Image 1 (cartoon, rainbow, N blue to C red):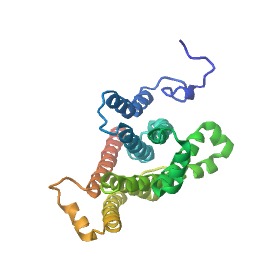
Image 2: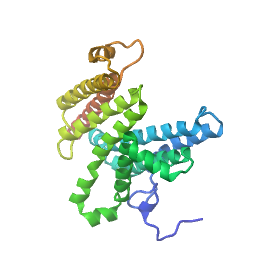
Image 3: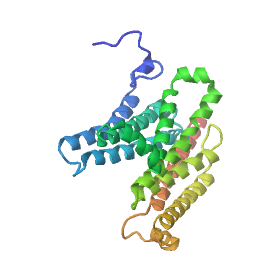
Length: 290
């Protein structure tokens, strides 16, 4: 069955703004569905453990955070790679994060056997649920207002100010993640460290361009150190473990890399992209000058 001719091009997620088929957008759309399809396959095979709904709740929440971080990475990646087409998928990725967050809440309601009164009570009385619900509401608002129509209604300046709230929502999301993780907050700390890098990038990047090499180096080192301090502070407050042993654990890789080192590696990867792209641009200019 063919699509109605009156359907706006942007209503079809695999088309670009000119209404043409975009393999890139289709690939991103399929990628956004993959975690949910994988989760559904595990559930169908009975491989989600003794509490399958709770496992599904944790998995959808984890992917909501991961995909939200990817949406925040779009602008830095576009600037570092000098690839404007990346902006075509920023809205789609943000809506994907919102969808997984909503599914996260729906599954929690299912775990409570659709007892909505109890759901409201839990959200009101448990601080980590309150924080998560506020973050979800914020994502829904940003999702609803992400359309071109809302840009026109609000005006570009006010729309941009509203959507900067996403960084605050990301902070609430990672706090919710850490509080519900209880003892093992490794991935929550990792996501906090990556958010530090993203916030630092936004502060250091000139308008419309990427930061220089020196600033990216300092950003990577600062984000890694900040991640180590966040981890030490968290364990100090939550469990009473002295900060020094936690900080020293970052130097011992026998049991795997700590979040601070992973943040450093990710930052080094972004720096490498900047260097490679810069060399590519120099070669193009040299060939053009011949």
